[in-house]
Length: 188
Image 1 (tube, one colour):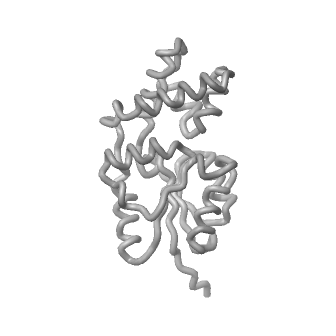
Image 2 (tube, one colour):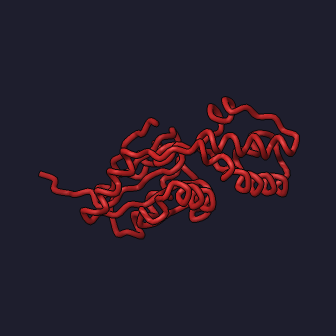
């Protein structure tokens, strides 16, 4: 009989812990519109949501690294103006808090921008509700590579068998699968 207990929860952020699709889309659309590029919310959601900013902008055909960086920073600046559309996944957040109260550890693990994650967490009033945050700049290889999950397991001294991951996107689910940990697919 296996008596391994889950000691660590790893929560993807965008689309899992918080529904940020509309806010992300609106901020990108506004930043791109200012620079003369057209993008619809439907196109962003269907083709680019969950992708690292640099990769997303490159796939849109924006080849100049300086222009991609300018657009990334502008998107970050515009993002808070759309926070009225962000929603917390209340059932997952409640589960996370109960798990932490019983002695477990919980981290946000996202390939997104740390500034964006921090801003949304402050807006939602949950900034102090996790034990750590690992973001895109903390890793070399984005999802679907499992590096982000394995790094937090290493930091916490946990094995994949002691870890439960919550994910929503196909690339995140693939990263969770590759990590060897159990995972839950979240649909908001």
